[in-house]
Image 1: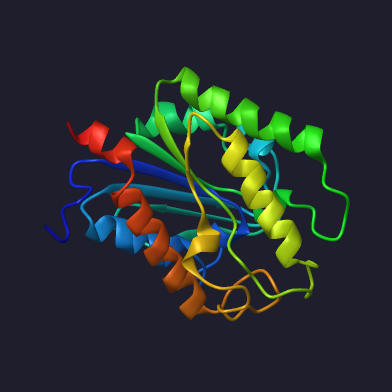
Image 2: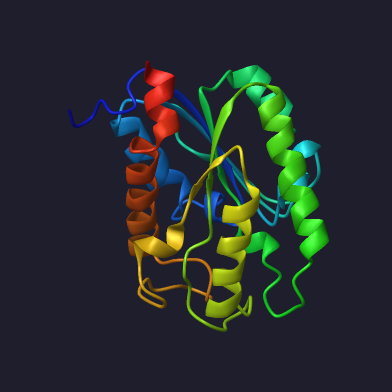
Length: 217
């Protein structure tokens, strides 16, 4: 039944800059998940890699939204919060991670070893708490721009994450659109219509994820 697919579930959603501004993912995704019946806590930290959620570090900007409250945004006083601390506080049924673009190193050689260590160390921390997780990969952007995003690298990053985020379920955002379909502001961050479309794709994937069905039993 519409509006009840996630009823009774608590979701902790953490991510990078896509989750850290008012017109970005933090509001439309939070709203869609809430409409599906979930209790949602969304946290964003600009530029944070997977490893940065293992400790508290200062970031250029961030966002935080709990339940029906409005999102709160910070500038240079923003920090990450260690994932174990967030899980202990929220006791979520599922952690949703939206981390990909910030680790893709667009325009530079891909840091394979560092990326693998960052991703696997974070998934191990989550698994140690016996909490289910869903990892959302990066979407297509517009080639070039401020961050030098490229179709080849984002495809590579998506495949890398798919192969390395276990035991998290992987959500392939590249399947939600065609390259360049969603308008961006800088090659990487979307106009509101893009974030709404991405939010819808993520929500549908979460609703249909086997891990969600198992948590509702």
